[in-house]
Image (cartoon, rainbow, N blue to C red):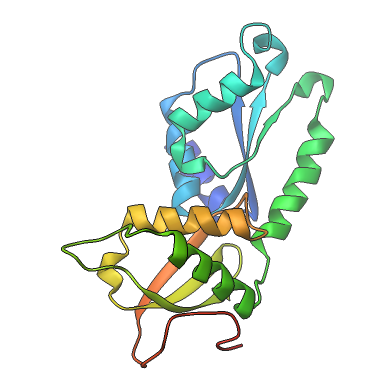
Length: 204
């Protein structure tokens, strides 16, 4: 219990979380709970697969990545580092990667660039998220916070933006913007002004 509480508090305080997985044993329920806590807190994270020297003879890095993605789907965005701590292998690279993740998590995206990305998403959505014939529409978006990157969308009906549609939008934003390896929090607010379709340069 106390270990769990300390871990939860550490996750809340951290700028970047290092989730250490023991490559010599299967992913445990504790690992899964910690991963979910990281997801719930919208934390940048590096999954560190330690003791890789004991596992690399029976599994390739690509196979182990697939294994972790299946068991920890919420951390799909998190980069994975393979280390052997007793020999200090890749330890420095993990620290360098943590600095990069922090940089992404504290990125401010210019509003015109952000809305240009949303315009592309709108063109590609192909009816994703329809409910009873209604289509989710994003009129305008702006970033309101960092770490986590938090984006406020002004939309037609917030209830249309379910988890599946939000994952779709976040995935596309991560591909198009310099936030590929960090979580993105999307907020939806009903649009109270008559605006035309979003586009770059609408507002600053």
